[in-house]
Amino acid sequence: MKISIITPFYNAERYLMDCILSLLNQEYADWELFLINDGSVDNSKNIALSFNDSRIFYLEQENKGVSSARNLGLEKMKGHFFCFLDADDVLTSNSLSSRLKLFQDNRELEFVDGAIQIMDSNLQNIEHFWQPSFSGNPLLDLIHLTGNSFSNPSWMIKRIPNKTYKFHEKLTHGEDLLFYMELVKDGGSYDYVSEPILKYRNTPGSAMKNLEALERGYRYIEKQISKWHEVSQDDLRIFKYRYKRSMLLSYLRCGKLYEGAKLLLF
Image (tube, rainbow, N blue to C red; front, side, top):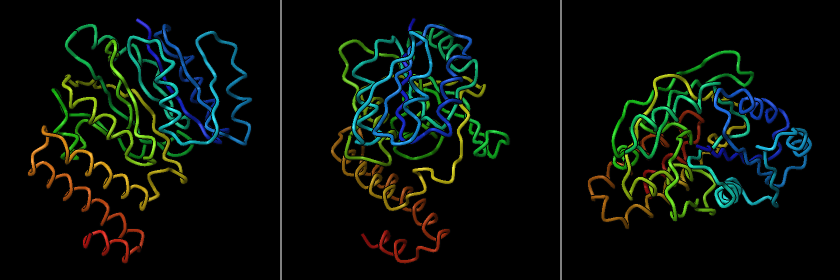
């Protein structure tokens, strides 16, 4: 049962080697890795091409953003299952095997996650530990922003034949949350393994620190899910309240009072 891993990268020379090595160190060996160069101008390309392994595929495009790069990987993948891995993160050695076993034990599952270790930029110290706590179809859990089934684009997903998987390319933030929402809207059950499956590197330049772009992402998601009959007005109100509360606190922590006030008015 082949597992496809899709890793876009842009100027990731500091971390890409660790990311790729975490695949080579997997207990489970039947995988393919798509490294998608999103217009890097540093040494990332040479690092990606330095590995002589038939399971590693290098793809290149002009700088179009992470959503476009992931879509290229989704078009090329051949696995029975797939997942995403950011270039500055690493998988634990049993990340693939533990989740595949849960899929094999429960044929009804379509999405399997696991615990995440949020670590410092050197992957030396654990700053936070995220543990999923939800089982079943997670659409409302995602919309309510509970944090019980989503912290990172870390799900392993069972590939359904003839199903189209695609990110909204205009989104730079929140694209993974909307991608998962659209998947589970069609049904499917989520579960998780209790052990860590990912080491998330908390880097100073993290995309999630661009608050204005994150707010635009939330507003775009709000517009999309407001069209779905699966989402009630109450659910939509919960989504708006929780993302605005989270954004307001983030703006205030950064001293961006004007942006926080504008968030509440519009």
